[in-house]
Amino acid sequence: MSVKATIADIQHLQKDDSVGYGMRYTAPGPRRIAVIPVGFGDGFPRIRNLGCVLLGGRRAPIVGGVAMDAFMVDTTELPELKLGDEAVLMGRQGGEEISVHEVAQWKNSVSYDVLVSWRMRLPRVYLGEP
Image 1 (cartoon, rainbow, N blue to C red):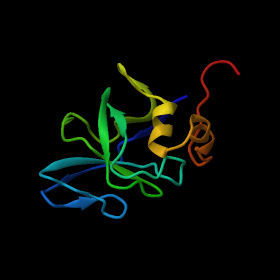
Image 2 (cartoon, one colour):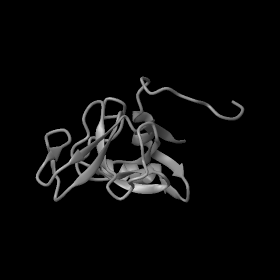
Image 3 (spheres, rainbow, N blue to C red):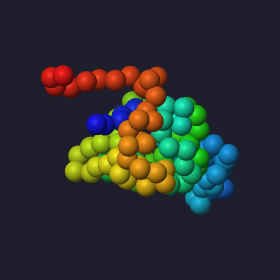
């Protein structure tokens, strides 16, 4: 099972700018931040400055708190990324993987909880035979 989204926006932060739900992240210097349009209202864990997503086959850290409909990711080290690029929240991209067990650790829960938490407002695509 994979959970994917696309980069909805890219913002540039300066030193001491804050982002994320509750403004829980303050930039230590210039940063390039991607907005991922999925949040705890979709079943993603309500975490702060913890976890990552896969972008361009590499891990990018979540910064700030996850809001109901979105969260932020630091893409400073991935300057080639652009709007609409795929973000993998759970699953594989390139040689990297974010497993359901890893997401459960971020949530301080178990993998079954993560699997049943994804809400119906996320579109489903079934691959292969039923």
